[in-house]
Amino acid sequence: MKYALMLTLLLLSTVTHAEGDGGPALPQVQYIYFEPAFVVNYGSSGRMKFLRTDVALRVSNTEAAAIASQHKPYMRHHLVMLFSAQEAEVMTSPTGRETLRKQALEELRELLTELEGNPAIDDVYFNNFVVQN
Image 1 (cartoon, rainbow, N blue to C red):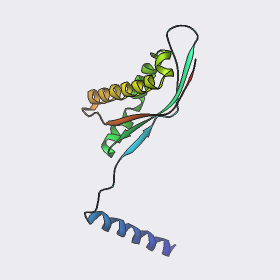
Image 2: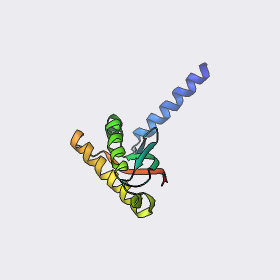
Image 3: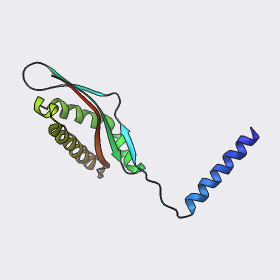
């Protein structure tokens, strides 16, 4: 126990010393994951179609992470509405999915700018994207 405490103090003093040396700053990039996965129906005609996707947001610092985390329920709502408004052509083509990703990023950035005065989000990623037509 005594040795563990000494080792911890030694490691902490080393980390503090290294940060104070003016060395390269560590990147603060963080990823914020929406859980559970999004499962929505989409399309306006014909058979019911489903999407299941995991979404992650990339932010560049802890302040942006706090802003994005605070508004996750509101952002989730907007993403559900965006995904469910799509047509099959968008969901089934790589070009359509990339357009949807960019649209999601733009909408979330606008939303956070309106709420916080800071767009906070650097990018949006679909970690998986499964559709059933």
